[in-house]
Amino acid sequence: MRKTNRLTLISCLAALAVVGRVGLRFIPNVQPVTAIIILSGYFLGPGSAILLAVVSTYISNLLLGMGIWTIWQIVAWVMIAGLAGIIKALKIAKPLFLLNILGCLTGFIYGLFFSIVNYLVTGSFWPYYFAGLPFDLTHAISNVIFILILYKPLLFIFKHQEKNNQIGI
Image (cartoon, rainbow, N blue to C red; front, side, top):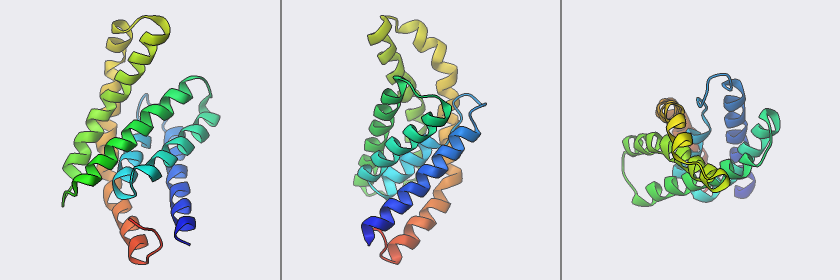
């Protein structure tokens, strides 16, 4: 029963991420996916966050446009899920500050990752990287805002599920 509840919770989080990403698509790089993956990676562990990253990326790209970049988005968000899992392993009593730092950094790491991929494909790194910095800054700021907004509601949900022994955190 615990696996079913965990999958249901991950599905609901993926739906939240997809709705947020599709609903905010007109504002460049403002989307809750990275923040939800970070929080899920911290509360549920990296395995659940990796599943969330794959499902939410695939479904949202079905609506927004599927392409070779989908693979690289999944890889980038999987790495971010792993970083959030490392923060969980540190067992910090009040992790919100550290999660916000991670959210800010991952806005830039995500952009750097895609600049490296662009370099591997086209041989051009610096123009792509510098052109993307304003978008990376927007991504970083929106990650911090979404983490601040979603931290307490998701903490409540995760603690409630754990208290009822429906998921193992």
